[in-house]
Length: 101
Image 1 (spheres, rainbow, N blue to C red):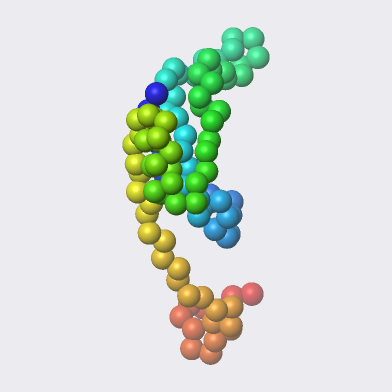
Image 2 (image 1 turned 90 degrees about the vertical axis):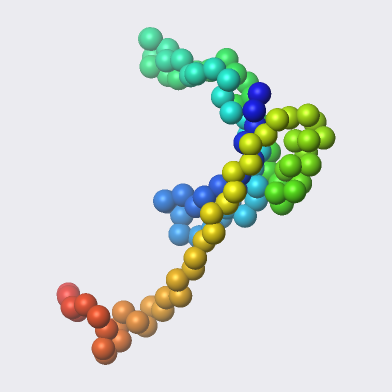
């Protein structure tokens, strides 16, 4: 019943940083998923996989896990670098790269 505490990364389908600021506590799977032979759906008897708790800070998530006696593994968040961009740079006179239409 090991829990994982992490800050989710931005998905490839997002241009913004939605759902990446909060810390998440979720349980590691205890049993592997099973495939239904008739329909092909995947299922699991492990109900703790459905639990996902969100916290504002890492310390709140750790305090919750320790208060309830949940063993956890902390996964540090990778730093994000924001590269400043300007739309006007696409039309700059001395821009690097050929202008194509």
